[in-house]
Image (cartoon, rainbow, N blue to C red; front, side, top):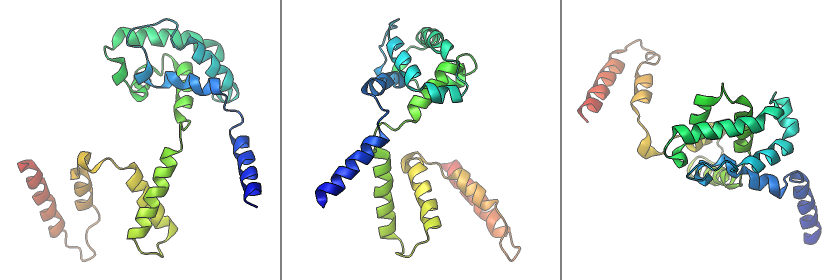
Length: 200
């Protein structure tokens, strides 16, 4: 029985990842600036971009990517990045997109596609682990919608050391007045919290 279950599981998993060639996985190296050479290398990424373009052709065409322009845009984008920035390894694709999306839309769409593919199941495992911890500390009969809301907040919130609560406090204090219509408490809280943070 155990062998049968495992055999079926392996077949199903192979079916899910049948289109993920090793070459396409290796070619995703262009998606990490930490793996780029420190000095410009004309050949860097040329082969990888060709592999990714061919591998993701149907999806790219559906996204209106002009495949014939991807290689040229890659070479031009590389030249601009190396010419403009000193420390390539500190760059992020969000930043590069904000500057060059209008100029190199085809290669940046392909890179976006590569970056959306999960490299591992670590993120999903972290989510399940967080869900277990959350359910353990909350009422066992918690509603699914509430649990989802809590998990979204926990998984997407900034680290507590980097969180600035002033915006949330201000939003809370300027929200709907209490049911009695008395807003003096809210205004007092708002001014106190602002004074508190100004003194820090």
